[in-house]
Picture (tube, helix red, strand yellow):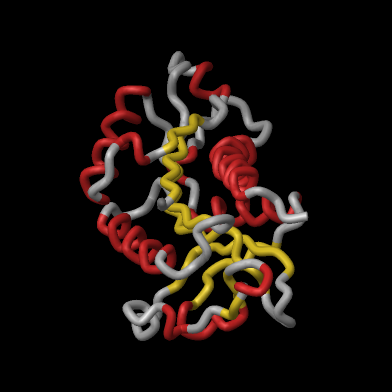
Length: 214
């Protein structure tokens, strides 16, 4: 039975939220009086957390998918409408060495292929703001091709630990650079890591900004 796309987005959301919390817990371990926060978290950690969440829910999770070389191993659509993706489906991307950070997929009716259920670009606390608009542009090209009914294309940004006021300012910056509105994002707080409470900063935590392309 095919899992509804809304449920897959919830799985992705859980993987993203848990990445910051798990990074801070592991970075600090049992060492007292340390305060390593998710501002040091590399994007590779977020990607690995997403892949683990996908695996736990029996999805394939393929990172760094190259448009030019890897797309023929993926399909879009259902039933008789399912077809193999080709680099020529993405003329603006095929010659640029473009990649998609992560694709979650399931078994395809076409042999040796994986059916796309969710394609994602991921940004972490160390990301350059200039890359946000480029990633969105890449995802927009992908969204023009894949099935809109039960396959999703998502941009995700996991922030460094922020106060609520800083979170609002960060969201405003992302909206300005990506030419989006605040309502275009789902904002999810990560669990508060205890070290900030111990330092009398109870409201400081990382956030996930999630934009599901229409």
